[in-house]
Picture 1 (tube, rainbow, N blue to C red):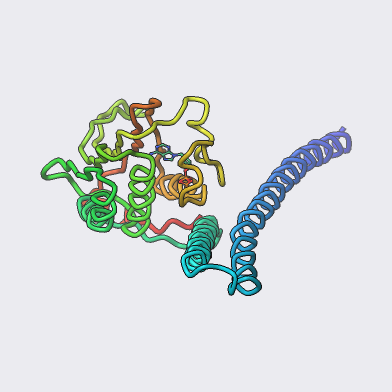
Picture 2 (cartoon, rainbow, N blue to C red):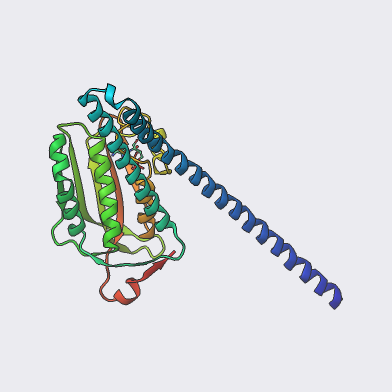
Length: 282
Ligand code: ADP
């Protein structure tokens, strides 16, 4: 009987082992698939501006003498714009791959959320004024510090405000809000305070069927703004950073009315600061 029990135990273990291996392989296959899709998308996205730049330069090189000065300037400007686009794309791809790198350590600390918000406003104010859009912030006084990563949060604000300005017409308004909210913890039924951040615009809005897909890499809603600057990676970067803060990015949007992206950040707790000020190793 002992022999039989041993054999059965071994059998059960090996079944468990097989199940785990199958799971591991499935996950590996999925990861590889995602990676190769990403690489083929990146290659495609990189090739397009490169081909444009090459054809502009070839035209100038071969037919430059037949073109007017005005036409030559147009070709050079177009090549310059495509080079900028290429630079943005390479930067976004690098940012995303750095964020997804498995051995990177992020130090989280107390962040006064007003600071990255004000910095973002200073960066984008001129751009907003040029487009005839009002860019403002509404920060509740005496907000507690949040537990976060300053530079990553700055990148979130830059991407969200950059998009809001891109997809809002002249006369519109973009506002960054920060205020405190009491949240009920599901586990302990206690109230805990979080800081809610909103980036709201009065722009073109996003149709319900696109509201999840916009976070996918390279997804861009087909519209007339599509051809403008943009890599389709901004919101993937935002989602990744927000998830590193152990929270979730949400949106409320209505076509023709506007869009609000929002997320909650944990309040920095002085007493348990040593434990909280952790390094996130993904
Ligand atoms: P992109 O570089 O194209 O802005 P993102 O990942 O940042 O890439 O955004 C993906 C798409 O989501 C955009 O191309 C646009 O169609 C849509 N989108 C993002 N933000 C807004 C917004 N504030 N208003 C309307 N559409 C938006």
